[in-house]
Image (tube, rainbow, N blue to C red; front, top):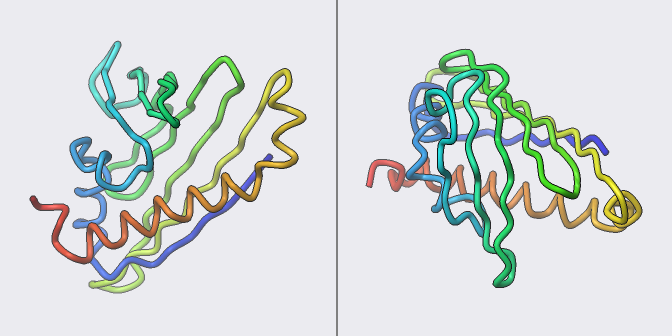
Length: 148
């Protein structure tokens, strides 16, 4: 299942990138995010791996993140694996002008087992959740909360 998301943020690309790559901000904009623990390599750099933990209605869900590519200031890509499947996520940050940045995110979800069937019914929920995360990130950056 492939999905594309896009949002314009009223902030410079430099500011958006700094907020996006600051792991302490994740708890403030990623729904149900609990923690991220680097398991190998340098955090956020290509080839590094980390355990990303979410609290989904009291149940701990761990995704293994592998950073596949990073172009400073403009591009970040990684895979996220769980027993239920894998997701490739590509983020692109493009300056619209000096004070506006377009964030485009492409997600390719591959499910296994029962989740493959269930994915037919949860595509809307995945879209809503991702759009909510992006809206929270936009608010975080635009209201200076990213600098707290």
